[in-house]
Image (cartoon, rainbow, N blue to C red; front, side):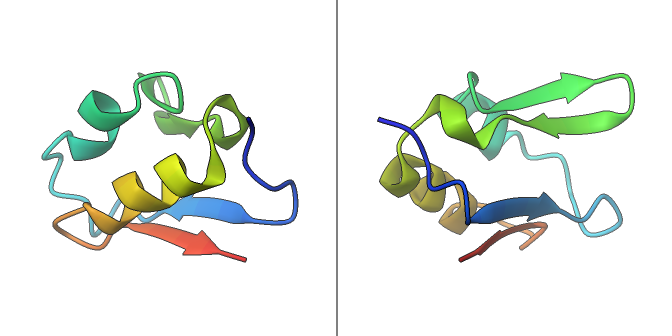
Amino acid sequence: MSASSTAKVTWDAEVCVHAGNCVKGLPAVFKVGSDGLEIHQDAASKDDVRAVVASCPSGALHYDD
């Protein structure tokens, strides 16, 4: 099951505290790349992505429908 193509996950690098909840929670979706966090939101279900975004302690991740 994949996430909705109309929804978008965004990441604010200036807010991020690098706790790693996203990478640990859904490593297929959230990957650390040379330019920061890479987000491949279609690699997991919409509900799973929403849950990991909600677990971000700094609020650097946002899920916009």
